[in-house]
Structure formats: C-alpha cells, structure tokens
Length: 77
Image (tube, one colour):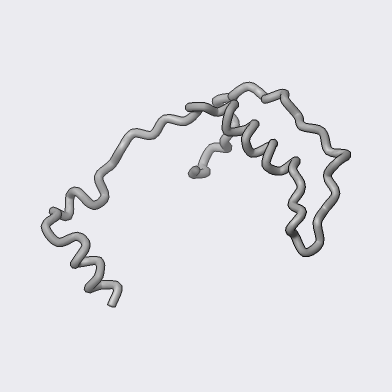
C-alpha cells in the first residue's frame, strides 16, 4: 500500500526533485529558542496525573556562546 501511495504522491515529479540537496545554516534565533524551552520546562502542569512541584526552580537566563568545535569529529547531526 505504501509503495503505491508514494508513487501516487510523486506522480509527475522527476526523481531528481525528491532528494534535492539544500543549504542549512544554524544559529538563527538561537537565544530565543533556548529561552522558550527553558520557560516551558520551568512551568508546572496542574493536569498531570502526578504533578511535580517546580516552584523552587529558577529560570536560567545565561546562554553559553556558540563554539565551533562543540560537535565531536566523526559525528553527524
């Protein structure tokens, strides 16, 4: 079924368009994304079956600078 569904979706497209390479650049809105995630994990969920009390948690606002050698050689992201 999946094979026929895929061929139906790709009908009219050439195979070179499916896996076309694209340039990706990281770091856009980095600080905002980090703060958004931190704010999410500090809040409490009152509707959880066993809610965790997070009142003692403090929102960290310091963000480490970007380092170019942060990823180990030989690994992929």
